Image 1: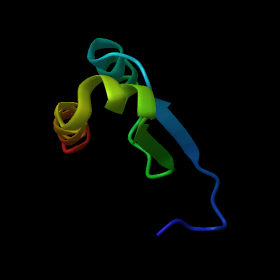
Image 2 (image 1 turned 60 degrees about the vertical axis):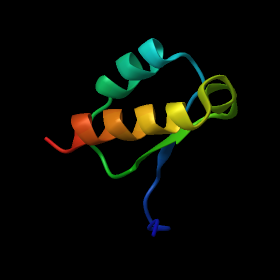
Image 3 (image 1 turned 45 degrees about the horizontal axis):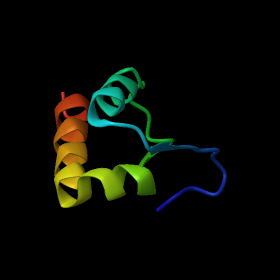
Image 4 (image 1 turned 120 degrees about the vertical axis):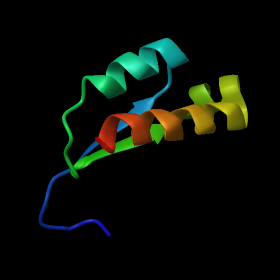
Length: 63
């Protein structure tokens, strides 16, 4: 649940997988950053794109 007292940054990934990886890997680990697989990304890659997104987020933010 989001804390109404905090400010958040929402980032929508609408590009290709390579640019998405670059953008996501450069972000700091911060609970106030909300990442979203945008409509253009989902239209281009479908469920494969969601799986890619999930794997990248796990790899970058789990360690």
